[in-house]
Image 1 (tube, rainbow, N blue to C red):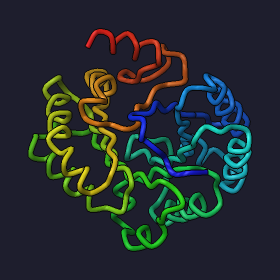
Image 2 (image 1 turned 180 degrees about the vertical axis):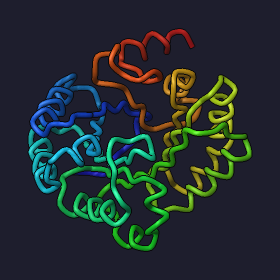
Image 3 (image 1 turned 90 degrees about the vertical axis):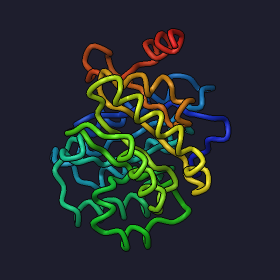
Length: 249
């Protein structure tokens, strides 16, 4: 295990979203064999397993088996329904899971929901250290944001104990995407001074441009789907469509 490294620029990341523990392991191994020479990351979306009758200690055991089987770096993520995830979990249980992941799971990074972090900020700050890359994610899907709100959000997130700050905000029109990207571009010096890496994602079909133009916002992790393109939500990209749109811009 090692902390995530972005010395060579942005890195692609494929997410595992399975509701069955065997399929979870198999999909992670399948993704790990895409390209041995390509420096991509695998995100393990544990919220797709939580609440499906799977013991969390068994999830950790599966993660550790995956880690033994690949040299690809791993991110563990738990996201509740409220934050566009796939499980119901209270803040106390959520912290307990993050604590187990931090101390027991052989992952290189843990993605923590900002709202959960704020509820127990002191406990998270005491837990999170230098062993793993700490990603704190802010999500919003229910309204249109202004440029000033984006700038204020970035200034708030750089004050957290995160190594990587991540914003996922729904785009309702192309101006939304542009505002999010432009304010991130304007805040690059702020991010640099705080010594934090950043991930900016405008979610939804109208936000795909933010994934393709990650160099513009200095986004370090570019999330792509590892599933059949026709079965994924609008706004997500596979590598084929990423390359197609990248050529267009």
